[in-house]
Image (cartoon, rainbow, N blue to C red; front, side, top):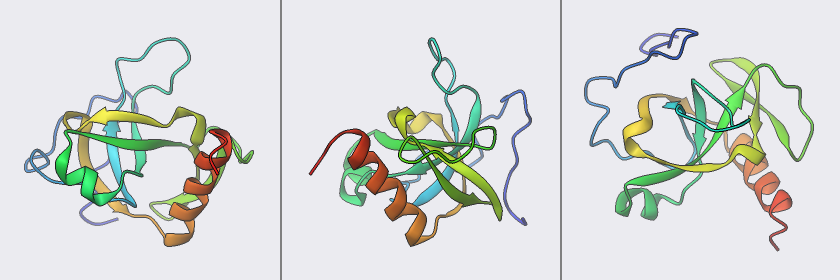
Length: 130
């Protein structure tokens, strides 16, 4: 995909020029550096969906993201099928986390409204929200 920076498998991405100071928006998919991690947390630099409300994205230095994986199968509500860069992936719902904007490497794309809604519904389900 033209203009999309791909990170090597070893997760050694560096911040893209201009990525700092950019305000991510709900529904955007970004490369996010998740290391260092502890225990069985999802590791390395990988795509993640921004789920924070836009007003909070503008006010806070952290954003709430849900990381994507291609290794796992879809098992709702813990993992939900999504598309990223035109390929099948899963959003790993139980790995939802707040990350510093400093962990955002570069924007990949904007997710479909259906994918954002499915991820939001799965978050509400695993957290037993009304």
